[in-house]
Amino acid sequence: MKIAVGCDHGGLEHKNAIAEHLKERGFEVTDYGIYEQKSVDYPEIAQKLCDGIVNGDNELGILVCGTGIGMSIASNKVKGIRAAACSEHFSAKYTRLHNNSNVLCLGGRVIGVGTAIELADLFVDTQFEGGRHQRRIDMITDIENK
Ligand code: RB5
Image 1 (cartoon, rainbow, N blue to C red):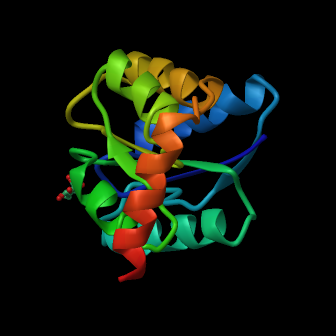
Image 2 (cartoon, rainbow, N blue to C red; image 1 turned 135 degrees about the vertical axis):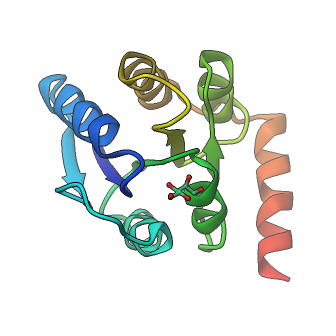
């Protein structure tokens, strides 16, 4: 599976650790940066990564900013993206199972690196359940298309 990662200055350490971990697990990881500690505008990173999901370059994305919230708000403006800001295990799992989320957003100032790696693992290892949940995803897509 191809996975994209990205961050702003609030999530560099977490993003690098997640990228390294997922590569060690055998995933093909595309890193949208940043690559060094500097202040950047998170919507730019979110848009680039999300465009790559929508056009099929990558299947899932993981974005890290200070809270995970800015990245998730920006990501959810991109048609076809379902982004979830998560800081605990249950949500990271169920946003795949029920929401078929394709982008996980994490807060580098909210959770530690170890938790971030565990949430990333849960997210990429969990499959969408489909069934009644697909109907609800279709309803979200209808809203998006209005
Ligand atoms: C940057 O200081 C911070 O606002 C950003 O990382 C993020 O937390 C936004 O939601």
